Length: 319
Image (cartoon, rainbow, N blue to C red; front, side, top):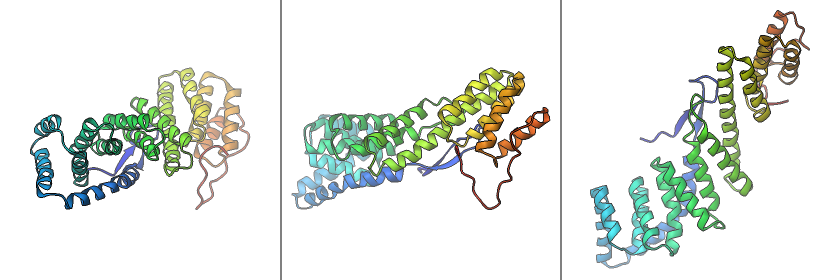
């Protein structure tokens, strides 16, 4: 059974994360709009001769009999484009994602210049997405925007591609190559279609991805610090402040810089970053720890930490 939620670690340590609602509902809603055309096709079949109805049913049963047999039949027997598309749509309604993708692919292969081929590419991409065949889904989405860049469904193709990358994001202890692909793909949606229905969700997911990437930098920086390599750690913490200063990791990054500079004996730099931390996040727990650390070294921070008001939420990011 498909899980509608997955946990993506955004903190510095494994096990910390947020419960992320992924884009399946958004992806499905747009795919449903595209597949509404299918209902017309199915209605047209009702008035056709019984032999055509029997052929449609036989094709569906053949697909259910076995994957290899279905592939052989589809590969060597040309069928009417409406029949192939309608059967694929039926498989989609039945959540037989792989079979649906196969029929939509066959529409494109057997009838490459038809209107049905254009529709089938997106339906194929969605079918692959639902079956977690992300590479195939991305390939189909790329093919659609390459062939039909000005089509009204192009924003959905770009968005579906981004969601495919998004759902493959690994925790911060692993390589974040796919995370960068997701970020770039969502930025592409925002840049190309800023007023589309997908732009808002793309912005939200981009912010989550930036927090993920910042968490990766923090995890590596902490590791360097534990290994007695404060100079390497400083580079990672500065990256967080330079690239991801509006994420939830910025206060800790400033604290870790204070900690690293004190380890190196750079007291002025430690006081400076402590002052930046106190100015931007006076009520944050990381400033309280930085204040205690600086005063324990005989240094005087710019101001004591402010108590956090009870019952209020403090804003994350740079003030």
